Length: 448
Image (tube, rainbow, N blue to C red):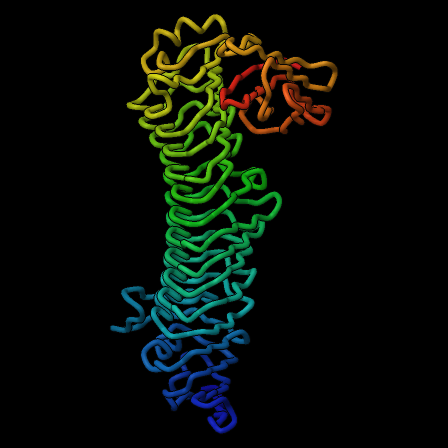
């Protein structure tokens, strides 16, 4: 047996009420080395295995600080009727076991640089734990690993984030995801009501985001342009967040069910050009104040209540054949006295006029420069790179969007005219939305 060394720093040398211990031990021998179960701070070097983690969980109830930075975590296979933390019979090296510190009063933890995995619910319920440095070597954060803990920020370098790994961390405000992170599990950050920022590394390796991954958070943005490898986003992934730009990766063929459901802060919706289907409730309740929506050309189906109660100013429908519709797709968008314009190709106008739900819109030729309502005269045209707007009445604002509905710029307004420099804009087709001073909105599609 390897010789064990133990030193106890008496409470007279530590802050009032704290008892600190520093030990060097071999795997499986921590119980022989630590004899004072009232210690509040423990620093271990040498080696540990699941037997030592079990000893800490069962005996060191007063522990608030644990430093195992200079330890090697060894593999262990149970013998006879041995059990630790449930029914597993073997435990891998370089892994914090499942449930290792579940519900403990830890406020400070230092982990070894060689750590590869953090087990399921390993730190779940550690309400006093405000900060932890997850080593760059960790490739797997288990299910519920830090759920309902007191973390305020977290940085993750690589690997997979398990289901509910950080769920219900009510103080978590910021997550930093380095480019090695590959997957975010179901409900990984669900219920993190203070979570405002997800900082993503350029060229992130994230391939999938699970169901309800960020539901009920205060997340303001998720920059999909930094995640070129994403192929899957789960249902309700960003529902009830504060995201303002409801954009998704360009490669997605299906807009997930409820993906931006109930987001009261959305001002812009951009549906991927590759999309073929829009899921049920995908953009339900997105305010879109006076904003426009473009349905890409390959969309063949739009699910139940997909745009219900979205305050759209207009819709551009690119599909030649009207997409099939679920129930109440645009419920609350059109009213008897306030039908919204739908712009489509001239050869498709009759088809849209005869299609259920689509026929509720005022349907116009997308290539026309006609105004929706000709009571007041409005003319919009390009001369070189300058966009000119002229009207018979004063203009409140002019917003120029690309064919996907993304806002490019606002024109400079002076009375009944406006201009915009479009030299930096690279698209050929633009949607121009002119709001007159009485609130009336005119919509044009122009080819530059």
